Image (tube, rainbow, N blue to C red; front, side, top):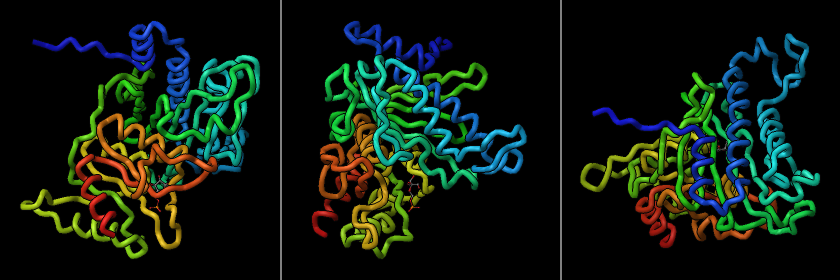
Length: 337
Ligand code: P6P
């Protein structure tokens, strides 16, 4: 008997969510649809990135005489543009800007949410055709509605996130987002130009056999991290292995694979960079939120990522996140040191 599975587009899904919660204002659904729209526009340009010679390199003008923007600047402008002209967002914090961007118009000042973005994470991989992604988080503003948003709206702990997600521009383009009610993945169907529900209710397997870390920094890691990596390499059929090491150098890609298949992703602090490389607000908090909604764990090695009180927009943190049992084994090594 064929299963008549109704395919939901992102718009249909978010509207259905709204129907399920009649008290909702619809602002979050609108915001997520806005992000989906911007993602589709970014996807078009990312897919052309290999044609730089024809389209012109960033900073040049292309055959149409248009200024060619760096892709991450282009991506940033797309996400900022849809949110500025939407009804749900009072302002954004982005990797591309030193300070917050306050939209400060009558409608935006009455909006309920603010967003944090890494508009195009891993953009250094574009010229070698490796998957890259957008990472975002959504907070309910804490400043008074009717007035412009402020820095305090953005320096909230990750536990205050209302939603978080990412877009992966890979072999297919997917948008994955989590709310407290669950995590769902939508694959872009080019035939209709819509994100369609392809991965309902994503759960991170409790255990896994994939560990992701940059081995190039191995000798700069703390002893506990080195001992855990050493243990991963020694896993075999008799002790829960063998493990495989997978590290693409694109957080969205590494995290997406580990989320679906089970695994652990690590960007530890090093002697050169004790707080690591990844940014708390718009890389680590969104993924920590998604991982926890999916049943996994995420810490900085000492503290739950979502509990960290941000002190600055672009502060960095060490990041360990993934399958619950793998994280608990790692934590044992970190405790011993
Ligand atoms: P490294 C990309 O530049 C990024 O911010 C993440 O997407 C990725 O996980 C990490 O840096 C890779 O850093 O130092 O291992 O090249």
